Image 1 (cartoon, rainbow, N blue to C red):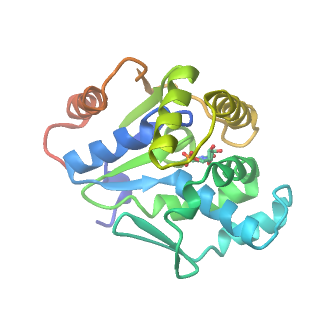
Image 2: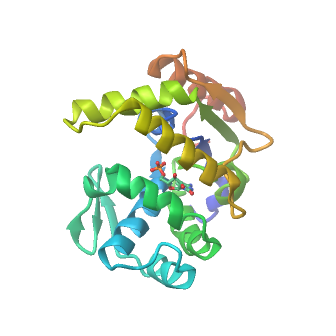
Length: 228
Ligand code: C5P
């Protein structure tokens, strides 16, 4: 397609552990759309910074690192400099570092085109913090997925315990609130709902109900045939 702006985008933004990633993946599967996990890009920049001992406050070095990032996505995984980084980017430490590198405007600018390149037919579901506000402001469908902080901490706790990682609920809640505060307070592309986004509170919703809500909104706004 020569006009990427004609490819529909469903922008799914929201705070950490709100369920937006699961919802975005389910919607992409149902519609046969591509999926952009933009948080993975910030996590990759953070991982590379940690591995190269680049200061998380060194804006210029981080922007260079982000611009030159050697990344490949495929088969549900991600490769950094040719090595499988799928598991490494999911640690809490990398998540916290990601929210620190994400405050720098230069890092965000360096990742902008990389994110927009995911807009390919028949359509894209884009998951992040600024998909509807900055990266795809013309997206026909925008969601802001949220849930209470306690519920988000409880979900993250369950995930980590299932992976055999022992961590207390209180420390997770504290980390989550810190990350929310940093994401919301930063000057560059802060976490906030786009003016035209629908708010989807998943605190008391099943994943299937949340996915159904998004699909319904997509059909109402864009039509029933995927791709248009
Ligand atoms: O969504 P995820 O938890 O993987 O994102 C990790 C961090 O990356 C977030 O806390 C946020 O600071 C940053 N991020 C961002 N903009 C995005 C996606 C993620 O600033 N579009």
